[in-house]
Image (cartoon, rainbow, N blue to C red; front, side, top):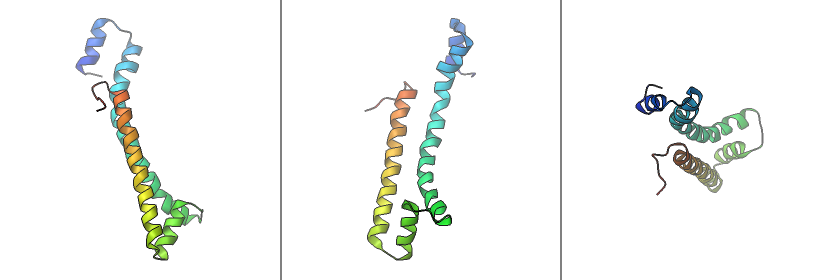
Length: 107
């Protein structure tokens, strides 16, 4: 909240609430979006552990069973699906960067 653009907004006479919401929150959302995007990839990786531990049917249990039975096409399919989810999460985060931060432009 000690950045130049915050001080400029205060000097213009904007209300403190508007300064915090419009200027401060927008600047603070960029690292939050980054962590959110990384956590989406970890969420899929944690599904394997959770589903295996609690014997729940799902993609994690399917991957674990495929690894145990050494079924290569199933392991490759699950790996490609996980990579697709990570790519989509990164794409969504990159698009949200352009929405949150006006300095970032989509090309």
